[in-house]
Amino acid sequence: MPELPFIQVLVENLAREIEGHTIVSVRVPSPAIVKTFDPPVSALAGRRIERVRRIGKLIVSDLSDDLLLVMHLMRDGRLQIARAGSAARKGRASPAPKPMAFGLFLEGGDELRVNEAGPKKRAGVYVLRAQDAASSEPLAGLGPDPLSEQFTADVLARAVQAEPGQLKRAITQQRHVVGIGNAFADEILWEAKLSPFAPAARLSSDEVARLYAAIRSVFAAALQKHRTRFGTQLPTREPVELLRVHRHGGEPCPRCRTRIETVYFADKETYYCPACQTGGKIYADRRMSRLLK
Image (cartoon, rainbow, N blue to C red; front, side):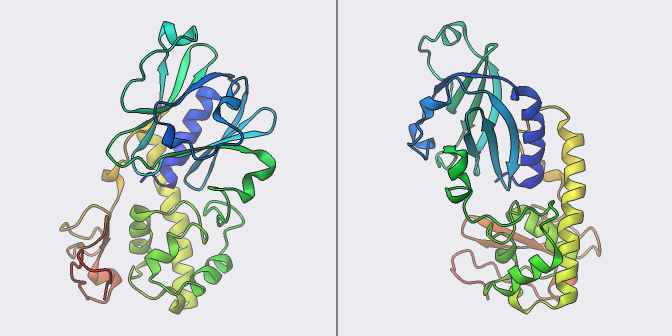
């Protein structure tokens, strides 16, 4: 799933392309992508895109007349700006190209498309009134952004101390801090030299300080790398080659050269260095189990 650096660069580049443009019409080849019904998606027509911003992993467009368009790409959703065909520009129906799920025709002839490949359709589009947005899904209950001034070491300490589960799960809960997903949790915990399987509530003050510093430094470096890699393009693929630990199972740790180990669980994997993070302990592959011991 796209995480904070990917979404941030996507939003920055998207803003340059569509801010100030007016939505002419909407088409929805995959109706299930629309998660709200009041206001209807038809209400987007005629609205001006005033601002495009990121909240966590969400792409939020502030529209004229106090309307918000929120897009959650989930695992397989991606954005594309394409030149609309002549029939579409004139308002006539035309077949939607696969794997397009949602489209906004903009003045000038471009179409902003949400494409979603793969059998599992999880991406979501939400149309919200600005006054209701903070208390509505998917914006309700989100924690602070790790790049914001509101995210402090004290905020992080309270969050992990209130979490009964494992540390990796704690920092990926969006109610604690937004934007951290499976991949960057591995990167952050490796940087902080903390075990992803450690009980979150038992972290010492020193460990919390290391975790906080790692969150800040990992995202700062990743943002710079993503901006360099994508330039002004809309990212369509997570550059996993820029990661140091995640998806590098079996390779030497960049810090100590110990073999990076992997634990599979459901549809996610955890990558870690036994020497740097778990005191030499190697966790068994328990992908058929509901518990990691």
